[in-house]
Image (cartoon, rainbow, N blue to C red):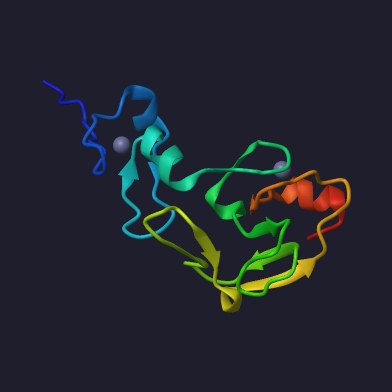
Length: 130
Ligand SMILES: [Zn+2]
Ligand SMILES: [Zn+2]
């Protein structure tokens, strides 16, 4: 008898289905374990605040802060220099650590953004803010 290889997601302990086992998602950081699609999405995918497409972990390199930041950062597009680059508290407030980001450009006029977040490489290219 051939035993099918069963992969269990180490985060939620779900058994990966056939599709997930065939093209497994690997944690991009940490232990690089194989995890299920759900956990991957929850932990590692972000949504671009401009085009609302998903951004893969490798492309999570730039953020936009349309209103700047309480700690003295001016409004603009910032490159992330290191993780973690922000602090959160139990109330859900979010503070960028100024030493961990680098100012790249002003917020392009055509971007109608109200709250900060990740910006994908496509949007940055289109706006000339790379
Ligand atoms: Zn999982
Ligand atoms: Zn985008």
